[in-house]
Amino acid sequence: MKSWSGVGPCSQPRGHRPYSLAEPPPIRARRGIATETPLQTYDLFATTTEAERHALYARMRAESGLCRIAPFGAYAAARYEDVRIVQKDAQRFSSEALATTAEPPWLGPNPVAQSLVTRDPPRHTQLRALINRAFGATGMARLEAQVRHEAETLAEAAVHRREVDLVDAFSFVLPRNIIGRMLGLEPSTFTEFKRWSVNMGLITSAVPAQHPGIRDTVKEMEDYLGGVITARRRQPGEDMVSDLLRAEVEGQRLTDAEVLSFLFLLLPAGMETTAQLIGNAAILLARFPEHLEQARADRAHIPRFLEEVLRYEPPAQFAFRVATSDVELSGTPIPAGSLVMGLVGSANRDERIFEQPDAFLPGRDKGSQHLSFGHGIHFCLGAQLARMEARFALEALVPRIRALKLRSPDIDWLPGLTIHGPRTLPVELIPA
Image (cartoon, rainbow, N blue to C red; front, side):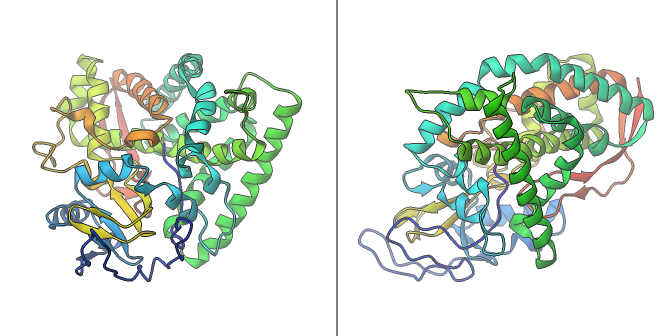
């Protein structure tokens, strides 16, 4: 699961003057690093269709080095190996970038900026060890029966209705209900989660008219989740918030502020990543009905199908980092303090790694080597949960239908590119 963060002034390591993303760092010659030559600049946000976006990714991969991204001048890695290095090499590519992209000037303080995904070792290592105590195999085993029951109940209701918006009826409400119960939150508040999640996801591409609503969301979440933490301090329960507060490694515990920052990350990310994975899977079941037939005949096809969905239509398209020193990647010099974007959606279709990258081929060679959950120390903490929820969702839905038909050929995608999936998904479910 990924952080939902906006683009603001670029974070710099200590000793470096901040630069505006609209005004990239000046070109400088450094010992051991060549003077930069102008790079091709691309505007990802100008693409209007999936085909256009993937054609643009292909052009970027064909460049001799890295590219720049309009309008804020970030260096962009489009090839698989470059994206993998950006995700993995925490010494050269710091996750501090996420901290500042979460706090653009118009927003102000945002607890996501202090969360696990914005930390480098050694603090990242300490935080992850503490959170793993609440988010490990034992916690996941405790959830399995709940997830399966919820998926079965929602699938039965959706198929009974036949014509539904699959997002509101199934793909979003399943992870929403599960994350709410994991955290022991009041069910009456679940209806607010979608608005919170959407607003947090808009920070990257928000226009001024959306700023007040996003600021209100951050305040509401701080007030509500802060109250939950206070209540669990007084009276712990059998939920993840209580587990986080109890977690201890080598005498260290999480502070209330650290728990709040993790909840700010987990609540929207725990819903949206899984919701978009399930939604994208439904679109591909409709477009490739032979895979619905295969999954109906053999449940073992579902995990292979989902891994290909993750490669083909990753829910998170970007990985943000900041260069900690003057570095070079694929022959491109990157000045210290520069924002670097790893384009996961492009890396997952790199022809150097995947044969027929634009073909949807579940069970393909290297199919699980996609970068959709990251790589290295920041590999997604919730990957196991997301896979489990998506698998149980399809295991509940697939046996109940003989066809899944899109009621419109045009997909209503979520705005922006940070999170990729359908905003609404009107479908007809033909009962088996």
